[in-house]
Amino acid sequence: MDTSLKDYLMGLAPGAPLEVGEIEFLLAEAWRSLRGSRAGGMQAQKIRGRTEDMAWNPPSLTFSIERHGGTVNGSTRAEIQRWCVNVEAHTAEITSTGRRQLHAMAKRVNVKGPAAEIAEAILKNLESPMLKRFPDGRVKVLISSVFPHGSDFKQTVSGRRKRFRAALEALIKEHGWREVGTNTYARLEEK
Image (cartoon, rainbow, N blue to C red; front, side):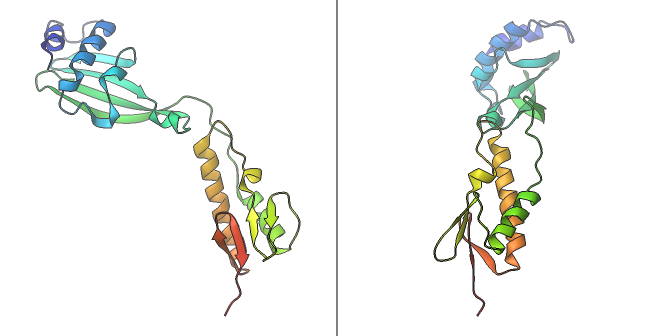
């Protein structure tokens, strides 16, 4: 462990006001040498300017940090990791995790309504802009017309589509229809 972090912290009284910027700099310099520091995808360059609630109670330095990995995949929430660095034992460990809402969530949608509408169109052979019919009797649900892609809420759209498919399949299955391809259904003859 870089002794400058340990030396700096050991020179402070427990609970003393902290110069967070200085400690973040020293912590980032020492990070790779701490056992357990790679947990949760944490890296040294992610420390500076991002810690919260830093506290010094020898031999432990504790802090929280907001992680944004999920937001890259469309989540509206960030993970909050609570870390404890023991400067005597040369360790870093995540002591707890939580979530923080960063952006407004998408409005909730009940998929049963659209599933019932599409099921009726399939079963009664009705025309619908949300369906493509094939000469062999197969029907493809044009899922992007039911739940369009959006630049936000990727996970939400994916979840809605999955729930929609399950609801639709439950409605048409009892009439002999089965999924034969992605979003494509056919009435299978019973033998």
